[in-house]
Amino acid sequence: MLSIKDIRKELQGASVISDKVMLHIHEEGLLTIWVPKKYGGLGYRFEEGLKALFGWAQTDGSFGWMLTLCAGANYFSRNSKPEVAQLLFTHTKTCFGGSGMVGGTAEKQDDNTYLINGSWNFATGAPHLTHFTLNAKITENGKPITDNNGNEVIRSFIIPKEHAEIIPNWKSMGMKASGTYSFTIENVMVSEDYSFVYDHFFTNDILDSIPFRVFADLTLLVNYLGMASHFIEEAEGIRPEIHFKGFAESVEKHLEKVLNIAREVENILGDHKGISDDKEHEIHQYGVELVQKLSHQILTVYTQLGIRATNTHSAVYQIFCDYFTAAMHSNFRPSADDVNFSF
Image (cartoon, rainbow, N blue to C red; front, top):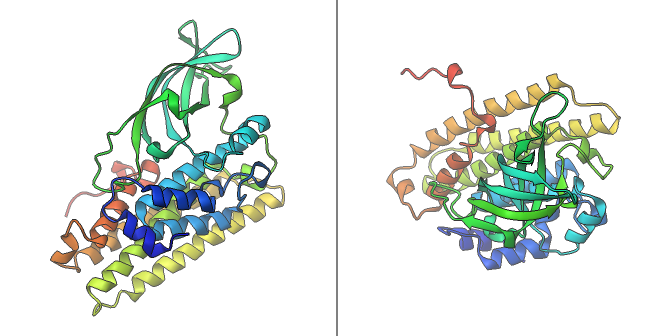
């Protein structure tokens, strides 16, 4: 078992999550926090899982991001047919990951199979995946199939890694070890059994009822807060004479609020009630505002650290780059129409 210090040492300046860290991840079952216990997973409750994600991001940005996205993809065990999920997750190193975009087509065949072709971007953890997950438009005789409302039908598929070609094109300033690469699939035949639909579950659990937007919002927020916590820890080491206590206390306060929201969501769903659209909007708006404040404060702190903080081999610089790379995620980005660019 690796300590936080060990993991940070392994990933400082790294361009990939090392074999030693991956062994630790598999030994501790970290990728299975959202996988039901009946499939061999840890089966965490929502609040419990968010605490884990915060701790991993606090350890290292790439470490936390990769685990969040890949454990999040393993959540699709709940959307998979039970016999498929049971088969796949008997292997302790099973690691799903992929792209949320619709990047290709799935040509329907006569024997309940689909021919997959296309390319997808931003598959976090790509070097470590055992299976790629992807969204594709369903076609028949080369033409898109539409539903009763005229919308193109989209399904998600699980593809073994040997059928995917990874394109190592991640050139961003941060999250360098996260392995967020593109991939292509060419003429791969997949059984319908290895397809799924996001909101169709084969398990019966409160976690299944959490709206995807709420799940995404809160899992990303604890990542930002975890990286911020690590950032201020390193900042205090560079300028110990500055009182950064208020920053650290704010991180703790907002983490507690996120966990309280998760608890509230679980309680509402536990009472067999739904999460209202107003509640979803309230949670999302809180996230938008928090990320804006957090980004501003990290910049404010960074400008107080001096030239040492610009050393590209320093921990604080890596965290700074990791945070602002992660903050580019479109989830909490405000509309440009709402931003005043004058100064």
